[in-house]
Amino acid sequence: MDLDFEKPAPKPGTLEECHLVIEALWEFCRALKREVAELKQEVTLLRRENAELKEKLNLNSNNSSKPPSQDLKKKKKKKRNDKIGRKPGGQPGHVGVSRKLVPPEQVDKVVTCPPPDKCSDCDAPLLPLNEVVRHQVYEVPLPRYEITEYQLLQGYCSCCQKTYSGQTPAEIGKRGFGIRTHASIALLTSKFKLSKRQALTLLKDFFQMPICVGSISNIEHRVSQSLESLHEQIKNRIDGSRVAHIDETGFKQNNRSGWAWVMANEYFSFFKLEYSRGKKIAKQLIGNFINRIIISDRYPAYDFLPTTCHQICWAHLKRDFQKISERSGIAGVVGRRLLHQYGKIFAFWKSSLQNYNDDKRTQKKRRRLKNGLIKNLQFGSECTHPKTARTCRNILETGEGLWLFLEDPDVPATNNLAERQIRPLVIAKKISFGVKSERGARFIERIYSLVLTSQQQKKDILPWLQNSIIQYFTGNSAPILV
Image (cartoon, rainbow, N blue to C red; front, side, top):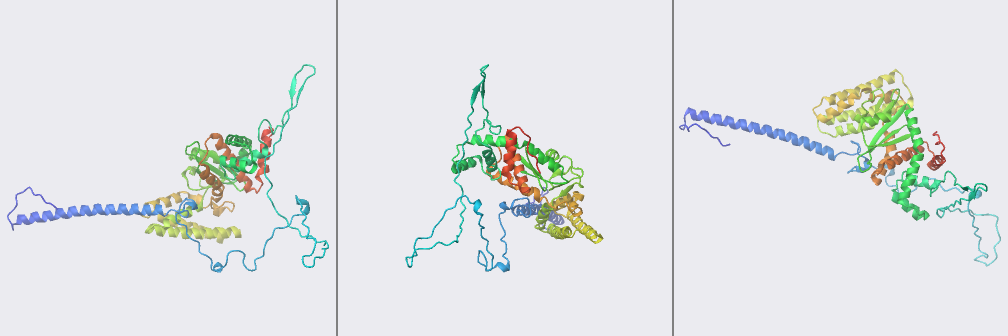
């Protein structure tokens, strides 16, 4: 360190020289102390930044909301000991399953295969036996579109010479494609996740059908209009249910950021495409929540729900606990404690669902488990790791919303139902990159509501969809949902 003194240099060996040297040494120590403090602060910031970067790199489907398909490192599942060394395929002693023969009256075509005329060894003629070996072959029929021509006959009044013309059936109208074509195209571009051009190619390759992309878009629009009433019915059924799930995911609309919302219960799924992910849309979808239980994650848009009506998804909590447990220091200790307590709570919940007991012993154990988790969350909220403390405080603020599933056997602990129902739309989004128009958005939300609802009720979607289209074309009311 360079020292600059304004005073004249003292004579060597004097007391004044010693004081100046000591003062210079003190100044050097103070400067060194300041520099060490700055370096310590810089090291602390770098360590914190390094820990945050490591945490981001370590994000996966187990400790965040990332889907499993985005995991960079996939852990290999360990093989069970009893399966090691086995060859693939059926194992010794496995009972085979063969296709059963259908009755003769259900066979479309019978081909008789007679034996040869003579014996190949002695050249003697063969005598017929009364035994027949039946062998059935399944084949795809040759596909080709059908053309129905409607000839509109003309007539005129013999008195006033006024002319009249025949009319096509109401379900046909002036449209160039029939009911089955409308329903098939709607399912191809929704349930089977084909783009409009892929659906067009399929119709041309398999059925040699002359159709263009614009016709497919118009067919989707007509099907969407036919499903408007059913879409409202599904929403009303969910609004009338005591327990409902809600979730949302990104879905582009008109080259703008948008969101796909889903509300579901055991038998119905309702989809809605909006440009917002805010609390206003959540309130519109949920509507009246009195005497109802809404299950969701801890997204702030649902904070308007009272804790007595809002069950927090424990699958999301587990991922939060897993993320905390992978941190170093006291945060990792907190996370491991929370994971351990989570396992005990879920084991108790599953056993209580099987036993259906609610005696004093069960109630006491439930209180002990709840208090144990709350104690660990309080400990985490006071730890020195800021992110861990903030997460624990946010979880504690949910209050009774954590425990509704323990008090009511009809309330599930997770929001897995809504996440499973919205998954097909997430896959379709990756293929189609969203929708380009308002009427396209209405088609997506309505057709997916019907497709997922039919799957929940284990019904064949095609007759249901065809009936809805016929009722709309003929001006009748839509079919009633069961």
